[in-house]
Image (cartoon, rainbow, N blue to C red; front, top):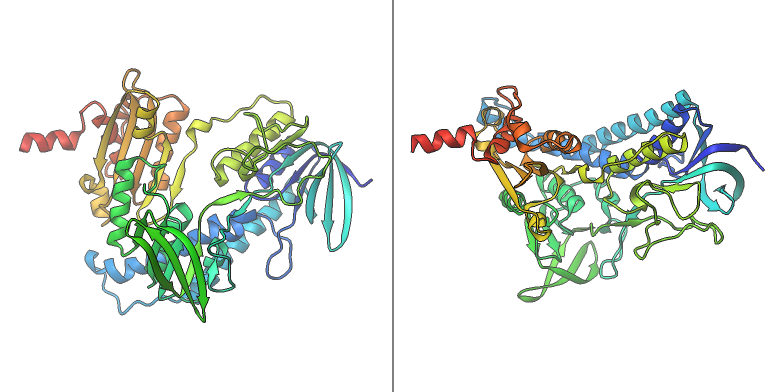
Length: 478
């Protein structure tokens, strides 16, 4: 038997590495198992998020956004530049640098906090043992507590089997060396819209095929409608109710067949990205006698504090219920580490923000107005357009709106939804407000800096009771 640990964490993604570092900081002898190997054959930490997900996609989103700003909008604010062209090779190199800095930072944190990094594939065995295998060799470690943070992988669908360089998943879409002339994207969710917008900005003719009839159903309908309008204006062809039925690779092209309200359709693309969701990664993770139970969807069954069916074994992040978000996984990791160390801890799952990093960004927290009505909750709402916000106008970014949803009886904030420049930063106001049980009046009575885009949140909160300053002044002028 090899070394025994207080805690062994399987997976070094945003949930796993945070759980491991927190546990070590709390004085627990901790190890973290990771099997991810980069192109150079070196084990790296950070999981999907840092290697082929959140971080690299944001690097390309930011680079492509700045390119469009320089090409189309610098002149509008008085900056004249010569012809601007994208250098995708340099963008990819920048992305690689960002990944390396982030993954290297985690390895440094492991060393600084005394976390033992175990390289290989982890498997949970009975008796709270973990088998770590690499290159045909394996070792078994024992722990008082195990934290499973194995993450998720992209869902593949039979009509569009992945084909090297032509039909790719989200990871492959980050590796294009040039913008395909005709790009198809299956799925109008968060990942599909982000990746589609990257290559749309860099010159691709992007067609998004979405089987559902409702666009972004998890977002308030007013915000979703505005987002769809803005993306269409940017040139993205988003087709709702388009169910893909098959595909055929013909040389360097992909012919996709789908059905919509008009019947059977067919379209040819140079590249096709499949973004229809992710599924929990449990392949080879659990020994036959591990005792850890999965639910009907393949997720590891856990309670509200991420305990599995086996005492002393926890599971967090994408492999358990709830939104597949890096920050949700991280907070679960902190909670579990605290519980293992004997502290009281819990997580507020009602106040987890979500962001789509298109341009403008879309962000939300809490419920939508439609969800409130479906649940029989009477609400009052307030909205405000960024076109009436002084800082947004000065930023030459007047697109979008903010919406606050409050309980009609108690005035407590139940949700906030935003589409705007930097919506991912602004939504933190809604998260904090909901975490502290704030009312719309609390935001309305708060003093906001002027000029700032945050004032749009202030105005939306004021509008909940019909007191938005700009709107009131407009009515007076009329």
